[in-house]
Length: 264
Figure 1 (spheres, helix red, strand yellow):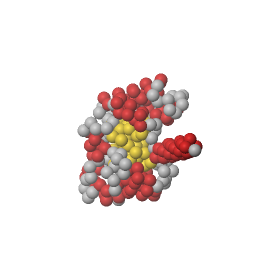
Figure 2 (cartoon, helix red, strand yellow):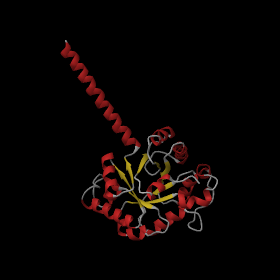
Figure 3 (cartoon, rainbow, N blue to C red):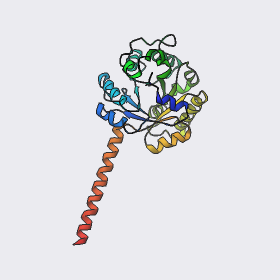
Figure 4 (cartoon, helix red, strand yellow):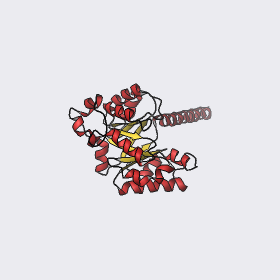
């Protein structure tokens, strides 16, 4: 079976950069995945794509060296199985607030006797290789999102779920659940909660990922001990890049115009 480079990087102690796709375009997915990210995640929860578009995006990612991953819409076992069948090598599942949900999530990601995943790998077989079924349980990643006060109250039991590969923190939803504004994840009770989650996950040698609003914050999170960081999503990066280009263009234009005036 094709190796999961994200899992291999985690096991070897190397940092993992993760691209994040919310724009429904296989071309955009191919562009992002070609920039050097270790993994690229198609976001079905808050992204603007449906399953068919998501599969085309996974195909586009698959021609690059990036590991194709998906954030599913919810703890929906049939959808999770279908996304794995479509070739996702990792599933990030939102709102895993209880150990029961964590167990159901792992069950959806693993073939029997470990879990309850139904057989029918379809494109997973094409991407993973002819021995996909024999090794899928060991290569595909199940990452539970910890993003609420309830999840923190049951954190130890959630993280002790057999077969769970790791966690992914949703800092904005976590902040909202704690009565704070999005973007307040580096300080106060939210910052303390994130540190608590990280410590608990690392004690169990679980992969720890987190969404970051900027490259600087992503660098900080790696320094804190996170294994996987997402330095913004495609829409935000596109928007900020466009703003930067406009500012640079206007500045250069004004500078040139000023020089011409001075020359006269």
